[in-house]
Length: 213
Image (cartoon, rainbow, N blue to C red; front, side, top):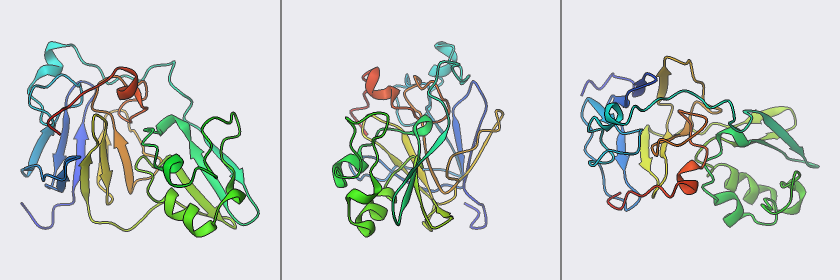
């Protein structure tokens, strides 16, 4: 690997994720996955050698076209006294860390208002937001939006879920897709997202499984 090679993920509408620069990759069991200078990762959901691509996308006529019926890609602000929380449902991977760690702030059963910034300790709420893998959640203190962390480039394979990218791994595709946060985002690997390449929680709806990872 060229030590000066900036990690990136490059792909088109019909092919796999081509990860360049060999960032560290671990699965949900904590096992490190071998990554070469260029590694093809499955995004159609049908590879028998997950997380790697085995060419199945061509057999199932995979397409990365966005579905017009997808959730709206829109940032909504929930204003509190000292903290404003921003949320984009369109790129949410439904990891659930927000509800697990700050249930007083993130109340999934309340709609359309489901985020209550003043309900929790501000420091804890910020720490929770910073654990959001998809970049759907961010926050403002005053007028400054804070959504990026400073981490080393890495990929995590979520259990029966998406690929979680951190550390400013550049995303380049032929749709000019732009993550909500360029520092961290989640990419669909079940093939079912309506908002490809981003995960939209379809892996749970179609019961996607990857027992090995």
